[in-house]
Image (cartoon, rainbow, N blue to C red; front, side):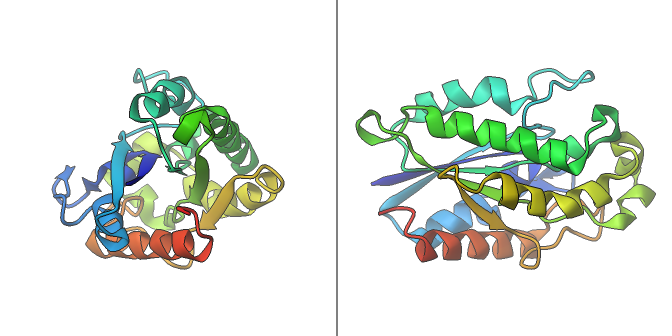
Length: 214
């Protein structure tokens, strides 16, 4: 049995912007990925709405991935692969971060995950960082736009290029969802049903192409 842990925010949790509820298990990309990979692979969901990479949110507690990722990985050990998809919440105006700063935080988190002995036989697991689909410009005209603030779509658009550059030489794998998956047409920053299908396909193809479960 191979085990994959998916560490992310509301788009890993499965938030449905149409209902403000959670997509069912047959819709979420994490479960679709598990189905595609087969019965010999267990996919664990560790998504939390509002989660950031390394920053504490002054409005809500417990959202920094940096303080939680070590106990999270160790509690689910042994793991073959850790998939990290974060960055959307880091674009919030109240954090005052550039796209490059956000990438730095995600890389710091991924390096910490890679340094754990949560793999088999006390080894490190493989780590795959996914750059999420960019927030679309129209988010500012939705109810969520006021809470997010300005500049989120621009920062999320630039994020993948910085992640790709900063992850070089780290031994951490990288995949860019941009061009494969787009955000919904409701709040423009969450996946709809088609987005979940496409995300599962994108990650499934990357896992097989790079033999991440061998």
